[in-house]
Length: 287
Length: 267
Image 1 (tube, chains in turn blue, red):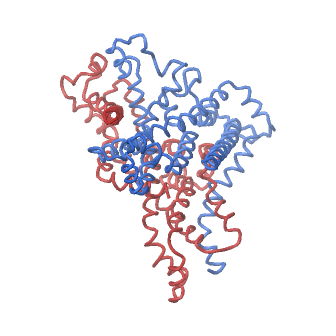
Image 2: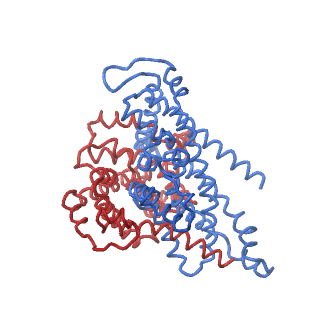
Image 3: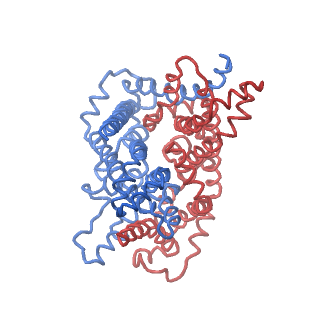
């Protein structure tokens, strides 16, 4: 391959990267130290935007909630996806149908799902409260989405449905395990649980890694559920970083603040990924 | 043990399906009925709700917009990713560095780029156009596409390339004759993933479009609840119309989608 040919093949990808990643990073870094309300010229304010963020209770709330989202993405999805995958891997009756069904929420409009679950958690119309009532547990009913104590977790409820993706990643990794291992275990008289625990789970480490990374990235980008189900409320209790940046830009027209938050979001993203990679490497070394 | 298995499967199925059934039922009710008996069968099936939606909103148009954006962005990203993945079949200086450069974006939370993307799209005069949105989607999903397609290409043996060169085929010819056909599974895996992401995206679509002519399905659904807030069942009918085609397509293609998706992700 000549140099010219190499450039030809690299060029489109490099220009996309320059336009959609490198330039934006420079732009975000620049904008983060400016003050601009959408009109007129920029004004350099140094680190003032960051001081503002640290003092802003809404931003702090958004930060904490984003961490909750990431933790939910890792701690809920991984075990639940693994459980469903272990079950379907034994190919019970109709397992293909279940696989199709469990994956379904991933292809349905997030916006529609957010509204659908808004109504599921609705105070008077909602399935959840009505189920609780009919079970005689009236005391447990709540205004899930407008109670500051539950709003952020209520936002995460529909997110659990995406576990189908995690499950399918596990299933695919499981399908690469040699069936002889299970035959040998059968001869030794191993139970289903023992086979899961000693054969399958240790061999799907890769899938755990992929899922953790995917879910972390997904949760960092989470925007639709907070926006549509609670609007970040009540009193910012369910705000996350995506929605915070969006609101600062679109509603408040504080572009500088929005992008200062953007800088921190990118840093958190990098830190989260490094942490995830680090933990996975540690785990691999131990095993 | 077997009992536990079925409990989990049925429970999870119910959680997935029941809200949809409720949505469909509710879309046939009158507004008063919805509040007085949210879980009963509708007394009279109100097809009028559906007529109201279809008469007041060009839903097929929104559908088409979403489809155009999804296809355009996917074609762009896959084409660019396939080209660059081919380059990485060869050895050259700083190869790992270049690969890192074009894929590091996978770890960047791109929603932090709302302001720069808004500016870029405005500067090139693509604000409020389907192509503008598609271009941003293609850019955002390029790193993932490169990773998936390259991992497939890695499994193509080098000897195959060498044989092709010995036969006198050039770099470009080898790309079209050998690499492209063999990378097809990776490309389709990445395409499926990209199409789903583009189809469901809301943030950039609402940031970069404004008029009804460029409204995507997601943005439209977001407006339904405000425009029909006095009459929820009509909004529900709109949502049913918006998601039903996706479900139908999915049922036909589910094996391909699920199989394809994970074949790429796990490699």
